[in-house]
Amino acid sequence: VVSDEPRPPHELVRNVDKDLETIALKCLEKDPARRYGSAETLAADLDHWLNDEPITARPVSTTEHVLKWTRRKPAIAALIVVTFLAVCAYVGLALFNKARFLRERDAAIEARLRAEVAEKETVKKLWQSYLDQARANRWSGRAGRRFESLSVLGKAAEIRPSLELRNEAIACM
Image (tube, rainbow, N blue to C red):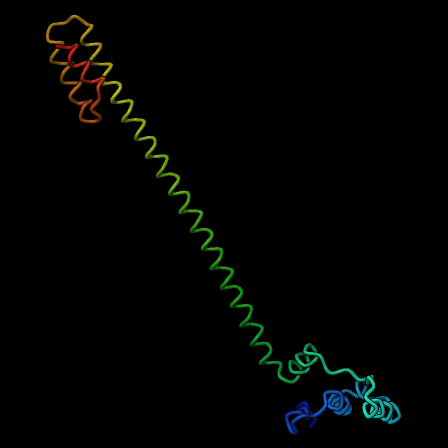
């Protein structure tokens, strides 16, 4: 009686009127300041209830229920709060790690794409340098220039065959 809250009447008797239950629970409050101030105010509330008028007593809110329960069972309440905070910390850390992983993955993808673009550009420049070398050999007037030009054009054709290479090979011959 001293430490536990009274069971609500609706748990003992079905179909108890909510206002009557509120009046009864107000009478059974542990804190005297929360009970009726006098028998006269209790009688007035009972008269209101009998006449289907609004009563002055208010049901205990969920917040008040929780506060009362935490005062009665502080160890369990503390355990629940610590567990909740631990779960929040775990979820926060998981979200932080996921965000970091996604940033690193995106950076790696971007770096790979830049490397691929750079490699394509390098291959393109190499192809163009082979073609330019073949032309320079052809225009040089040196002996054996045709074989050197055709050899260089063969390397360029391994990278990317084209009509331009064919025309240069014909010009070399």
